[in-house]
Amino acid sequence: MNDAALELPVELTDNAARRIAEILKGERDGSFLRIGVDGGGCSGFTYTYKIESDRAENDLVLDRDGALVLIDDVSLQFLRGCRIDFIDNLMGRMFKIENPAATASCGCGSSFAV
Image (cartoon, rainbow, N blue to C red; front, side):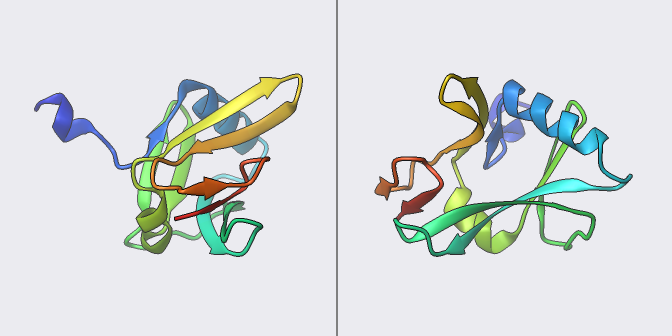
Protein backbone atom coordinates (compact mmCIF):
# COMPACT_ATOMS: atom_id res chain seq x y z
CA MET A 1 0.00 0.00 0.00
CA ASN A 2 1.45 3.41 -0.92
CA ASP A 3 1.44 6.60 1.16
CA ALA A 4 -1.39 8.14 -0.89
CA ALA A 5 -3.67 5.25 0.08
CA LEU A 6 -2.94 5.93 3.75
CA GLU A 7 -3.72 9.65 3.63
CA LEU A 8 -6.80 10.76 5.54
CA PRO A 9 -9.00 13.69 4.49
CA VAL A 10 -8.17 15.47 7.80
CA GLU A 11 -4.76 15.57 9.50
CA LEU A 12 -4.40 15.30 13.28
CA THR A 13 -1.00 16.53 14.51
CA ASP A 14 1.05 14.89 17.26
CA ASN A 15 0.27 17.81 19.61
CA ALA A 16 -3.47 17.55 18.97
CA ALA A 17 -3.46 13.77 19.41
CA ARG A 18 -1.60 14.05 22.72
CA ARG A 19 -3.99 16.69 24.07
CA ILE A 20 -7.11 14.82 22.93
CA ALA A 21 -5.85 11.56 24.49
CA GLU A 22 -5.18 13.48 27.72
CA ILE A 23 -8.72 14.91 27.71
CA LEU A 24 -10.32 11.54 26.95
CA LYS A 25 -8.52 9.84 29.86
CA GLY A 26 -10.79 11.84 32.17
CA GLU A 27 -13.97 10.79 30.35
CA ARG A 28 -15.97 7.58 30.54
CA ASP A 29 -14.94 4.59 28.42
CA GLY A 30 -16.07 4.79 24.80
CA SER A 31 -15.93 8.60 24.67
CA PHE A 32 -14.42 10.52 21.78
CA LEU A 33 -14.00 14.10 20.63
CA ARG A 34 -16.44 15.12 17.92
CA ILE A 35 -15.22 18.02 15.80
CA GLY A 36 -17.84 19.68 13.64
CA VAL A 37 -18.93 22.80 11.82
CA ASP A 38 -22.05 24.85 12.61
CA GLY A 39 -23.50 27.93 10.96
CA GLY A 40 -22.75 31.13 12.85
CA GLY A 41 -19.73 32.95 14.19
CA CYS A 42 -18.41 36.26 12.98
CA SER A 43 -17.16 34.79 9.68
CA GLY A 44 -20.13 32.54 8.79
CA PHE A 45 -19.24 29.09 10.19
CA THR A 46 -17.82 28.04 13.53
CA TYR A 47 -15.86 24.98 14.64
CA THR A 48 -17.42 22.88 17.39
CA TYR A 49 -15.82 20.46 19.85
CA LYS A 50 -17.89 18.03 21.94
CA ILE A 51 -17.13 14.97 24.04
CA GLU A 52 -19.62 12.28 22.99
CA SER A 53 -20.11 8.53 22.97
CA ASP A 54 -22.68 8.07 20.17
CA ARG A 55 -21.31 7.31 16.72
CA ALA A 56 -22.98 7.47 13.34
CA GLU A 57 -22.24 4.90 10.64
CA ASN A 58 -20.89 7.52 8.24
CA ASP A 59 -18.56 9.33 10.70
CA LEU A 60 -14.93 9.79 9.71
CA VAL A 61 -12.85 8.21 12.49
CA LEU A 62 -9.38 9.51 13.30
CA ASP A 63 -7.68 7.17 15.78
CA ARG A 64 -4.15 8.11 16.75
CA ASP A 65 -2.11 7.36 19.86
CA GLY A 66 -5.11 7.14 22.19
CA ALA A 67 -6.90 10.09 20.59
CA LEU A 68 -10.25 9.26 19.03
CA VAL A 69 -11.82 12.00 16.89
CA LEU A 70 -15.01 11.68 14.87
CA ILE A 71 -16.27 14.03 12.18
CA ASP A 72 -19.77 13.75 10.69
CA ASP A 73 -20.16 13.67 6.92
CA VAL A 74 -21.73 17.16 6.66
CA SER A 75 -18.88 18.77 8.65
CA LEU A 76 -16.33 16.80 6.63
CA GLN A 77 -17.40 18.75 3.54
CA PHE A 78 -16.00 21.88 5.26
CA LEU A 79 -13.05 20.19 7.00
CA ARG A 80 -11.60 18.15 4.14
CA GLY A 81 -7.89 18.96 3.79
CA CYS A 82 -7.71 20.56 7.25
CA ARG A 83 -4.91 20.18 9.74
CA ILE A 84 -6.02 20.01 13.40
CA ASP A 85 -3.33 21.15 15.81
CA PHE A 86 -3.09 22.05 19.49
CA ILE A 87 -1.04 25.06 20.46
CA ASP A 88 0.21 26.06 23.89
CA ASN A 89 1.87 29.47 23.97
CA LEU A 90 1.68 32.88 25.63
CA MET A 91 -1.64 33.57 23.89
CA GLY A 92 -3.21 30.48 25.46
CA ARG A 93 -3.91 26.81 24.95
CA MET A 94 -6.28 25.89 22.15
CA PHE A 95 -7.04 23.68 19.22
CA LYS A 96 -6.25 25.34 15.92
CA ILE A 97 -7.72 24.23 12.61
CA GLU A 98 -5.80 25.19 9.49
CA ASN A 99 -8.45 25.12 6.78
CA PRO A 100 -7.24 25.52 3.18
CA ALA A 101 -10.84 25.99 1.96
CA ALA A 102 -11.47 29.01 4.21
CA THR A 103 -11.58 32.30 2.35
CA ALA A 104 -11.73 34.33 5.57
CA SER A 105 -11.52 33.73 9.30
CA CYS A 106 -11.91 35.70 12.49
CA GLY A 107 -8.93 36.86 14.54
CA CYS A 108 -9.26 34.08 17.12
CA GLY A 109 -9.59 31.34 14.48
CA SER A 110 -12.86 29.91 15.80
CA SER A 111 -14.95 30.89 12.78
CA PHE A 112 -14.42 30.94 9.03
CA ALA A 113 -16.02 31.59 5.65
CA VAL A 114 -15.85 29.49 2.49
